[in-house]
Length: 385
Image (cartoon, rainbow, N blue to C red; front, side, top):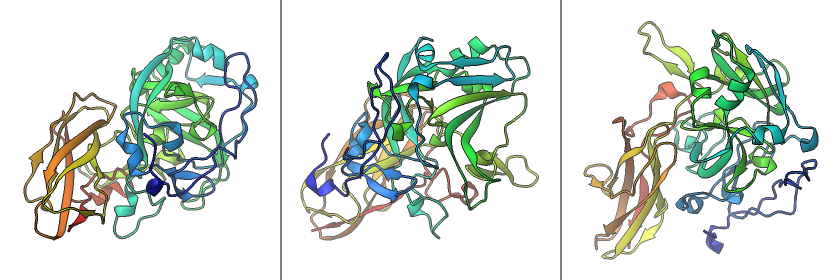
């Protein structure tokens, strides 16, 4: 869906792939002439771009409007020399070329990826981290090989615990401080690593990944927040103990009280249910006495969306939205006819999602989640005129 002139917030040059066809792969280079209109710049370097709400109205968001999350600078990778190393608690160390990875039984799946900090701008007081609105989330069609197929070829030894995905990107973080330069990595339990929805992807929406989206190879961990979807993936290490790296202890972690002793820090994992109104937008004017189509999107991670509800009176009463067929892992587009009242004045719209496990978006923020897993309901205040 093309963006209107009004929605073109900023034009941003990004990297693009040069020569990704099999047999003609070359070094990845930055194409600084490619415009990406409408993307909201949350950080210039390393580049972090948010999708505008208009982009969320599509089932599969085009690459040029799919949000970009980078912790360090985009690495330059020679695809001809690329090797994916699989080592650690395995029977056989592997070093696979991209062509060899592609021959391990490719599949295509529709999967929603959401940054764990999506919606952080709505936290009060302001929290540390990128100030995302609602647009650090997008759905795409991903083509890749199940990670389980790669692990099967390597032969995971008995007693394996985690599978650590390591990217080529490297750098330092000041707060909280890293122990010098480190790669971005993420450890996931063996069971999740072997699940069908965990992919090593090279295509996005039937086209090769761009450098900004992790080319030539990235992870897509269906149903989990985006910190697990490691980009520029070139190394996998199977461990015989839980991985306690920087990115799941100091960062991308939340407090858990279920142990019943004292709160413990645990890694962020599965996506929480969430519904977002894409139209009308906040602080907009709507015509009194008219019928308006309210649009939005909802997702629930590993579970399917069971119900979406809309309130036009700040949560006092709710109307159920008629949904199309839903499925786990991918988001659902929805719309609802609203008979706008004739009386002029402010009104507050809210949407909430319930998944097939009965989990519903909360009204208030859970502070134990620190700056992550932000799914409490956010009012959309409009003015009837």
